[in-house]
Length: 141
Image (tube, rainbow, N blue to C red; front, side):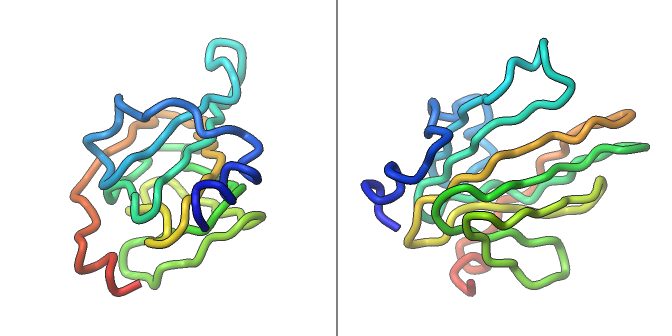
């Protein structure tokens, strides 16, 4: 999906460059917070990935509760848990990521992609950023 088509259907908006987390991504991503974290029990943001952009492997740690939910809203992407096949993402797909599961997500090589990210509340929650998804791993998809 090209940028012009994507912009027409990305109803939650691309947002600003995701500079604070750029070191954990291959390619450019954008962040558009949908709620004020000081006034919401959950943090929700629309995350947009340019074609081939993906985040590093990472884990949402928690001793209780926690994890992440992705609601795919525009374009096409990938989600993969360690040791499992990648899952194709398209608008309407919902991915529930349990706490303490190593995973990554991002755009397909020929498409922009957006998802709403919901950080699930829990006890002792913490994100651990790990190694990048290599070009050779990604090229196999």
